[in-house]
Length: 589
Image 1 (cartoon, helix red, strand yellow):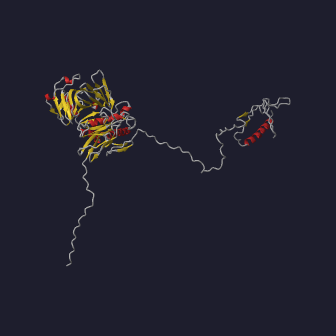
Image 2 (cartoon, rainbow, N blue to C red):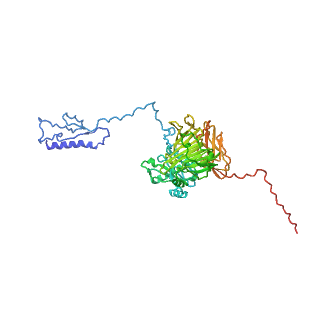
Image 3 (cartoon, rainbow, N blue to C red):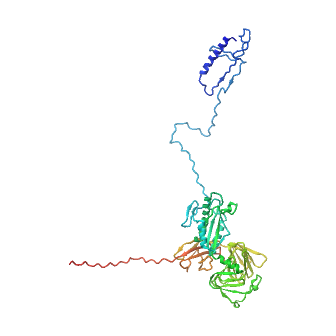
């Protein structure tokens, strides 16, 4: 190719490139064509000369210098690159609405527009079994997230413990709680009732220490407060069940004293009893084996030591020595009786005996009882054998010695054997009578090869082929639970189904061996007579069925009596005060 022809071709390319560069940037969606020119397209060969008329034309794309439409490229030309499609892809269509067609759009009306939908907040759920502490009116109560907590510090509890003196014993049962809560566990009600029964039946207990603990979940400060709230919850529950507040001291230790790797075992409240006369009683039992002490006496009672006879065996005919041939002596309080002693009570008399393992035996009026065998040691071996010739006795085992106190009470024609149970036996000289069980389980043998089991809340008639029968439920007390009254208040309770009469007892002690008022009423109310002033009185009630079988006893409650107020002056016309005589003015001089 000649030099002049090359310059003309380069000038033409520059003229074509200038308008393309001056054009604005194409819009999106318009296809863009890129053309790449090579020396082969421009016809530049290696020969250096222009082809002749008979030579082959270059295979490149021809370039026209005029403004006419460009000719289509030959088929042998270089392929053209296209970066994008010639037509933009269609936009995705929205799904067709379901339902009637929407009305035509018009001008927006703020008043006609529906209000924005606001989702209401759900109320915070509360546990149905949770109840805040209400408190008992103590001056030291403080408000917390669990309610009113009434506890002292461990140091103050130790000071109260030192002031009370006596011997400290840990109660066998514990009260457990749910996780991070003051709600009692399922078995807490039974444990609380056992504590109440033991306190009411043991007036020698001066103090009950209520000790709260938690597991190690949470901070140290939070667990300390939670343990105090749990101890206060137990104290409040005991007060509601009739225990005097001055006998209860509650405090907490938090998580500092775990007893097990199980967290549920550490969420607990335990009890420590402080008894005033237990130390002296245990010391006496260690030196005087086989002794029973008379700790309560109401009326006249006699005792005598008799030799061992065949009347003490179960297979005898029930014969007893003639009373005329025995030298009976009067029973005094705190007297000690050994094995082989016969005791009897007169009409209207009650005698309360305490055995070395703290089991109590109460003799009702007109009762004959023989102490056959009394065995007790510090290792927990206890065996008590009694012989009821006639009358009625009530045996109350010590709850602390549960499972270790074995008692055998024989009578004419049978026997009652138990391990740590509370029951009553009423029998005549011919072996007729009844057995009622208040706590635990007893086995009644009537001379045959088999025995009959009588469980708690059941009664069994003796001397006949009968099955145990259920007793009436305990009446629910309406009032009073506590408080001071100028006179004897009216004691009320809820009626019991199938009850014919109600037996009410009022006594100055929780053992009820010195009953000062006893009534059999047909209505669920009773007003006692003959109560002194300025004293505390305990009362309970039982329902009797058509056969006279007493039901379960209600809870024991207490009240105080005060002196009645002086009588008010009778209403009438107020007395007219006599006017002082008025002296006449002196005459002027």
